[in-house]
Image (cartoon, rainbow, N blue to C red):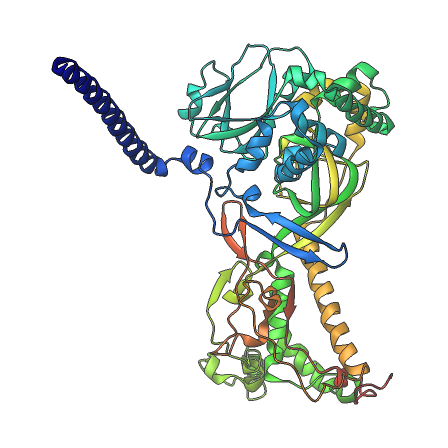
Length: 583
């Protein structure tokens, strides 16, 4: 009996030891997992996957109009900066048939930050949001290999990839200027639309996040039909153009496949310099503007205009018909302007010497024509040519010295490109030595454009299209003409404002003016106005200055108007001495 009790107690102790060991193993495992999680906090993958914790992730409020409570979950939109949100990642991991309509709409709204996705039509955006899945790859990962058959196309949500001609993509890390694609770009679309081989290799330059559309899902959800509808619209657009009237349907469809549709919002920059762009742009919808950045300091007309207005700083009287100078004064002024520093005294002495020589009179005298012996009549007049002394730094131009603050630039509109017109075709057949290589900027006014690479376009056109292009010429105005236009518009704008102040009675201010708190904003409208009257002032208003980069030149300050010293408008219009005469 005793032996039986001993064996029974040994079995119980053995079981307790096993349970104790199991408990210790669990505790050690929890500690290891905790240490492992703490160590992963420096990695991006952990930051994306780990769910952020907030005190009150869900809040709600009562809507009086709908007579119901609206609930908002902030956790649906939580993500690290720039990364794909976990909620959207959860949707993208589902099968296309399992995704609900609200989930598809939410994913579509999130993907509006991608330019290439936004270029598609709304029905196609919804279909893409239904079938795309999320992928993340590390640095040096080959996404597409040259020579293989394409089965997917990709949207870059975060990161950078390089396009190379080799098989493994190693040349991208050796090349100083590789071809790069960034967030918002897409690639591999032709591999899904047509069963063709890949023409290049795409490799990740860093950790990159993709949204992938597979060929099976693409065909199963009839995305090819929507793509065909968009292609048909492009085909009809090209067919209506007179330039492609002689092209066959086969070549025109090839042009459609080579084109890439891009949409630009109002005010969005399309190209910093479309002259050097590698693509030809067809405006299929909307319009855009061609701008030119002009350095006003390089214009002789601007140099003359600046100094003419700086002479008014001394408040000289206005030369009008009321105080017009006499003919004698005008002749003296003409002499001074014709011979500004010439001493005429030696002419009289020369005449006396010639008249005395026949009479035997000797006349020998050294004539001093220095600046100190100028005639009394000319002395003060010559000094009055520079009546003002500007105490500001000067820069040297080929036309003379110019105040440093007056060396500014301006964006001037040259041309408006309407729907159905092209950009980049006017010089395509000209030799390089005859081309206008000035940088020209293209800005959208709300436009949809079709981009075709120039070398592909030249391979496709026939002789008749080439002949039409040879007659197609667009001559943009010179920089000097643009500078004159800018100064004329500036003078008219300042005169119009002065005239409105004179003719319209000023609005009576209320007795109590509310004081609004000043917002700390970077932008100020006064920073875009060059004030010539402030050149001599010691204390000047501090406004941020907008600088524009130039090709191979230092940045240039940008202005949209110039405030110059000018005569009072009452002197130009003496009848209207009081404000509000037309009211």
